[in-house]
Image (cartoon, rainbow, N blue to C red; front, side, top):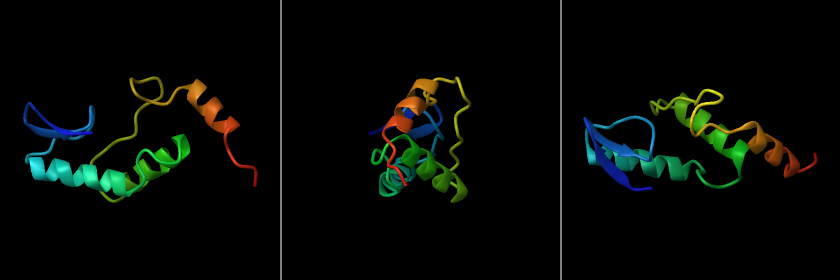
Length: 85
């Protein structure tokens, strides 16, 4: 996802924190991809985001039912594709 200019600074992605400089927003984008964004599926993305939050990225988990949050249908689909242990 490209960095875009918004009111008050720059933003990587469609939601999330607004950074003062374009360089900071690009750095966040690189960190997101390095932590496994867009690989592995729903649970991998959830764990990667929790890891970024713990490291101080400034992001927040979305509330259930909010726009962009995983739906019950997404969790059911993810449960079908899990590997048996």
